[in-house]
Image (tube, rainbow, N blue to C red; front, side, top):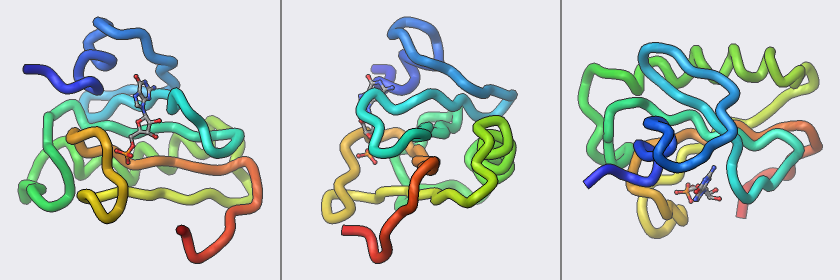
Length: 110
Ligand code: 5GP
């Protein structure tokens, strides 16, 4: 059974894709928390950080984040967040990083 994000990657569910390469696909979050809120998703269906393999598509998330931040014009800074598990509020069991920017971000996160 494909995950929600695999369905977006495969075009079965619409997604506002801003970047893709051989390893990851990035699309705008349906409920953005900032002017830029992009989800960077490895093509491989890894449930989350807790089950990360040593090798694979996920190793390209950071490089994709840098490129997308440049494409989005986030010259003043941005944040990359990965929620793992219930306590962090992970809702989609397909590893993804949130690239958030375009406004001042508070710290620590809630
Ligand atoms: P998590 O809470 O698992 O870290 O993040 C899941 C994210 O997926 C949430 O920010 C949520 O708004 C987003 N999301 C849930 N369903 C959809 C959808 O159908 N399309 C898009 N683009 N984002 C979604």
